Image 1 (cartoon, rainbow, N blue to C red):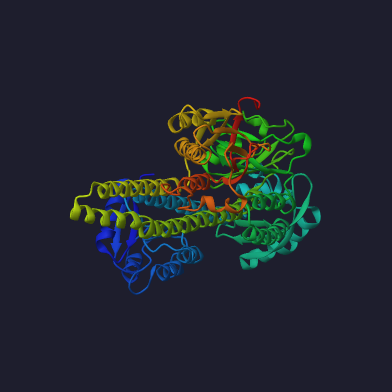
Image 2: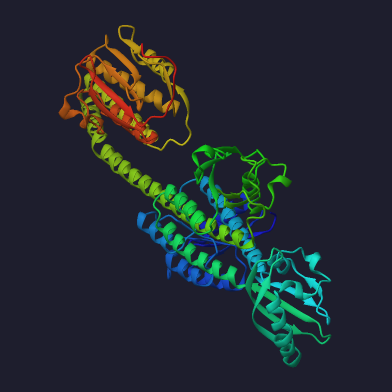
Length: 624
C-alpha cells in the first residue's frame, strides 16, 4: 500500500510533537504528521481534514488525553487512537483501554520508541482500512441479497441475477427465455394469473407472499414484489422468508455467543465457544480453529471424531491449503466442490469447505461431505462469528499486554526504591569512611588512612558494579537460545574457583534461556559456595527428579531454614567484605526468565538451589 497515512499528533509540548513527527515520517515515507497543541485544536483538525490515526499525550491543558479520546470516539468510533504519554500508570492505561483507546504507549528515552510507535500506527491504520473495505463489500452484498428478474410482456424471463436463480435452484442462463410458470406449483400459478397480475396491470405494483417451486420440487414461502414498466415488462424481486427466519434466529443466537465471548477469560474458552457456536448455531458438521504460531497454522480447537483427529494439526504457511490461502489473502474462501481443486482434503469424502481468517490471529474452517453446502448466509454468519472471536482474542491480548506493562512498571518502581536505598545507605557508609580517612591523611600524612580510603573506594566500586548488574539482569528475557548447561557451568567454575575445588555435572542437559545471564548465575553460586564452604568445596549440577528444572548444590555447611528467604534479599550478607547482591542477582535472573528459585539442603548437608519452571530442551545423557 502506497497511500498516504495522515497522523494527528496532539501534545502540549510543540517541540516534542514536531520532533516525534519527524521521526515518524523518517520511519515510513507514507506517514504524514500534523500537530496540535491541545484537544480543542485536535478536534478542529479532525473536523476539517482526513486523519487516519490520532496520537495523543495524556496530561494536557483543558481536556486531558482520555477526555479527548472520548470526544473523538463520539464522532469517529473506528479511528485508531494511541495514547502516547510520559505519565505511565496502571490507572491511566486502564482508563485508556476502557475509553476505547486502540493502544497505550509510554514515552521513553531514546529513539527506538518512535520505531515502535510508527509500526503501531501502520498496523492499526492498515487494519482500519481493511475493515472499512470489508464493510463496503458487506454492504454491497447486503444490497444484492434479493433475487431480481425482469420479464417481458409475455411473461418470459429476460434477465435474472444469480441470487434469483440460486433461490430456485437454477443457473441464471437456464431461466432466461423460460416462462415464470415453471417457478410456481399449480395452485400458485392460478393465483398469480387471476389475482396478482390483474392487480399489477391496474396499479403498476404488487407485493406480498407467494409459494415458490425449486428445481428439485421443494416449495417455499417467498416475499414477492412486482412492478410494471412503461414497456409492459415486469421487474420481480423475491426473497426466501424461510431463510430470513433462520438467519434471524442464527443472528440472535450469535448475539448470545458474542456475549459469552466477551466474558471469556482465556483463549481456550474463546476457541471452545467458537466451535460450539459453529456446530449448534450455524449447524456446521465439522469445524476447526487454527492459530498462527511461528511459520505455521497450529490446530487450537476442533470438532473432530477420534478417528479423524489431527487432520489440521500443524500446517506450514508455505503449504498450499485453503486455510493458508485464506490467512495469507485475509479473505474468506468458499469451495463448492473440493474435487475441482488441486488441494487434497484430509478426507476424500469431504466435498465443500468454508474458510475465513480471524484477522492475523488464525483461521476458522468448516467442511462438509455435501457439495455446495455453504451459501451466502453461511459465509456471512461464519465471518460474523469469526469477527466476534477476533474481538475477544484481541481483548485478551490487550489485557495480557496491559498486565505485563503494569507488572513491569511495578518491578521498575521496586528496583528504583531499592537502588535509592543502596545509594542513600550502602554507598554512603564507605563514602563517609573514605572522606574521613582522607581528611585524617591530609592532617598527619598517615598511609594507613590512605589504605582505608582505597579499601572504601574499592567497596564502593563493587557496590556500583553489583547495582548495575542487578538492574541489567532484572529485565525480562525476550531472546532465548539453547544453552548447554554443563559447558556454561564448567566455564564459570574455571573463572571463579581454583584447582582445590571441584565441579560435578551429574546430568548433561540443555535449556532455553539467556546464555550471558546463566553464566552470571553460575558464577555467583560458585562464589557463594566458596565463601561458605571453602576452597575445597564440591558443587553438583543436575536435573530435578520431576524434570521441572535444575539444581546447583554444594557440600558446605548449608543455610539455616529461617534464613533461606532472606538470603535473596538485596544487601544480605554474612561476610564483612561482601555486598549482599550475589544471590539477589541470581533471583532477579530467575525472575527475568519466568523461573522460580528456592534454597534447600543438599544431600551432603550443604546448600541446594533449585530452579523450576525451566524449559528443558533435552537431556543429553542419563544421570551419572
